Image (cartoon, rainbow, N blue to C red; front, side, top):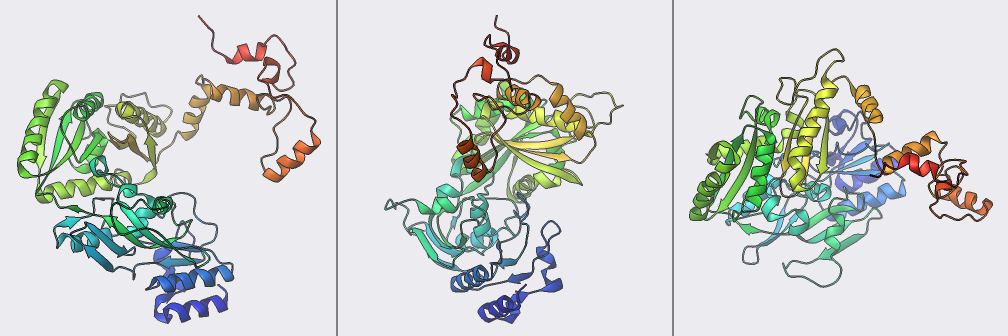
Length: 469
């Protein structure tokens, strides 16, 4: 860390709010220790820190609660960690307008506590609400099961204040719900992970707290039956606030079973009469769908189950190798979960172990799917067999672009529609290569499908295309 930059940071936020050496241990990321941690208290201090770091050519990593810092590749250099925990004030709350403006270092649980004093709440329920900050939730576009009814961050953010890497302050949106003037700039920063700037203030839409809130756990003997039940619920008159599909391993991790079967988790909230009707209606609706039993949870038991569900990705196994997120159509959620469990099971099984069905005792993955959005998270435990999985995928027949890419690699790297090798990947090298190459037609003909092939009878194309009846 350059000494002038360290002195500048101490002058901006004070020596007590600049951490170095062993004090940076809580902010180690994938074995990389930050050079310095700065903890600003105002947006002006954030702007000054970013400007000083830019002048010293030192990278800055914004840090909220740290719950999403493991996503993606780690930065090659962890220069200045910008910790925003001091910026945790509720700046403005208009209960009549159902809006609130807050500093983004506040945690979700603290914000919900302040809003709850006026009977309102922010309809976001990401995992680790006691640690996750509002800025981190917006930057990672995190959302919990209730997005099924209430939407995600994009639907709740109406105004934002961002500090860019050059220290400039950018404001977008407003403080009213119906604001249609200009570009919808706030949505640009959602899911950007701090790469476009540091979100320091946000104005969000609120909702009144529901009078009643229940969680229905509907159990089924098989995952496909639970998937069919989820489709039946979505096609009915029911209005669940959350709808999650869990397999047997996920239920075991929740403490709701021994690892067999599947379940549909359905959240219901609103006025008491409506909630009671929906709880009774879901059981009546799912009886023809091979429902085994249904439980209705309330109070602390309901909250504990939702908290366990939110942390299911990393808590299903003692040693988690990977947490994957797939986006599929709602009708395909159950099938994709079964395929993911089978793939993880094959990866865990030694070569001499005979195959077992999905209901066997050595299932290799657990997962839960949100039926409406089609997002499926699959947690895979560490185990051997990754090379066998790759070999199996290579041996399986592939269709369409997969086979064409495989043929290109085997043929020396010819590009479809152009005879000859691949053009360089770098943009500057591509320009140089094109200037030296004579003009060629890019028509899709059989003679251009294979490297160096000059057959006009379409033999390469027939070798790749499936036979026609």
